[in-house]
Length: 186
Image 1 (cartoon, rainbow, N blue to C red):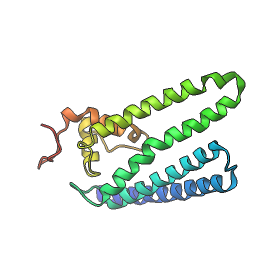
Image 2: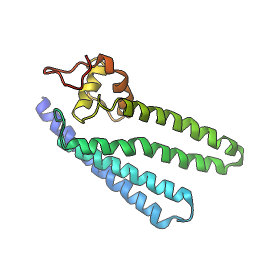
Image 3: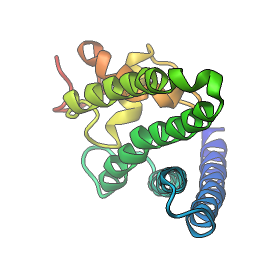
């Protein structure tokens, strides 16, 4: 059954990635071309949308390549996808907090709220960078996910947002299938 379901899910994931790529690319360029270019929030919004497009470009390339064992050319897309993965939510939070600040009652909370959003993002990025070798290749990621969740299914779109810190924290429990991977701590 897996030989039928897996390719169908891959094609569906690539189709959704292409749709999201086109949508975010269109929205980002529209905001940058039609918005007030002298306003910083226009640039933050447009660049945040273009970062989302970059993420879905990387996602489509990685899903199309499958899960390689060890280092592969897919690792370029894997490492490039970390940039929008960590930066785009900060851009989106800045946009939301900009508009929250326009309401005078909430304007004094703008900077503390931005800090409250930026700190967890910085911690997640720091954990990912400190444990770069654990999930250094794209093929390591699903195996690390399975070992950190006790062998449960592959990550979904909802749960993959916290996968890098989760795999980083599971570093001590990491057990790879035979043959053992050299990046796996014993």
